Length: 74
Image 1: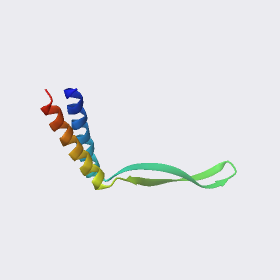
Image 2: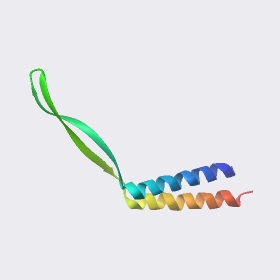
Image 3: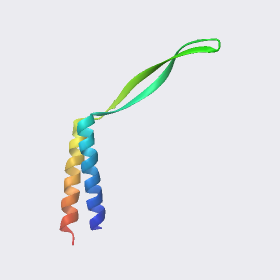
């Protein structure tokens, strides 16, 4: 069980750092603007799913706690 706690602790720390650096998940969608017969015009719209810094901080803390717990169990 020790290695599972260490693995998830490191994973949470890495994800927490990524969330704190990027502040969101960007993605692009295409929206149809105009359609006249077989001709259509589309527009690319860039959007972002916001991720609060509290999420990144809590993932960092959870990762540190898991690493401490994993290191203490023998």
